Image (cartoon, rainbow, N blue to C red; front, side, top):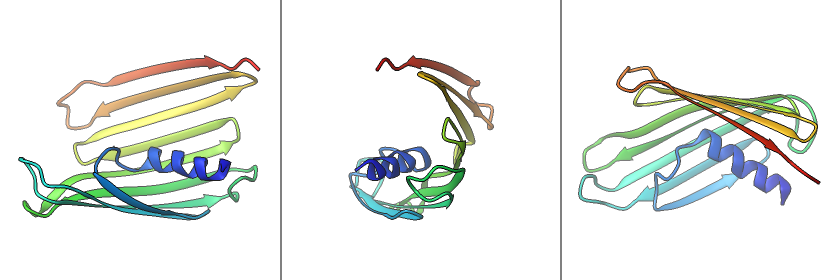
Length: 147
């Protein structure tokens, strides 16, 4: 159950969120894939999605560095154009650190770093619009787990 939850979290980090009404996903220890459909709405037709993710490095559940690369897209069948695209990568150089970086079709570059020391967890994230329509956004989250 813990490994399944880790796979779901990794998919959420690397794939588009909320892009479909119905999704089917296959997850294994190294490769994950999903497909889905978004039902027609006023502004767009039937939208299909596809996501692929590949994990490299230490085996799932084992300690050791690993990295994952993934991408997902939404295709609008009525307008015959790309509705959304995201490409992202995550790496865990040590069990207490996680680094993620992604870019989407609008030119938004997002990144986050999570570091844990004892019971303290620091999560820092940033987003920069490379098309310069919006300014940069930054966030910091500090949490402490009491056991």
